Length: 129
Image 1: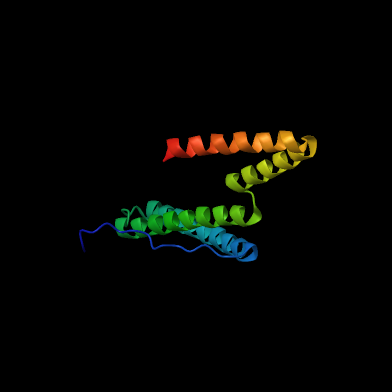
Image 2 (image 1 turned 90 degrees about the horizontal axis):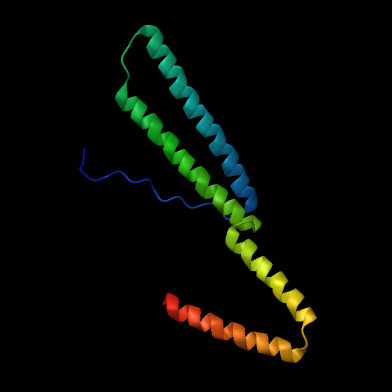
């Protein structure tokens, strides 16, 4: 066995909402199956008064952890695709706010607000680098 740490393979989330939903359903089933296998193995081990198979248990827990990580990745992708991520929601709110303010401001006030907003944005960009 090598001394290099074992890293999870890079997971590419599905590109469509439907594919995300299908993968989430499959992952949930796989996670439940692994948990049942771990529990069943432990019950049998206790009933037979055997010691824990550490190698098998480690593999099972690793598989469970990787499935849970993929579940989180696919869930986040689904949220992005559905437009529910915080960044998308914030952008939609900003668009709505601009639409409301634009409707209520005359041209001079609107242009003045744009100049102030651009100046503020440029100052914040300089600060952030």
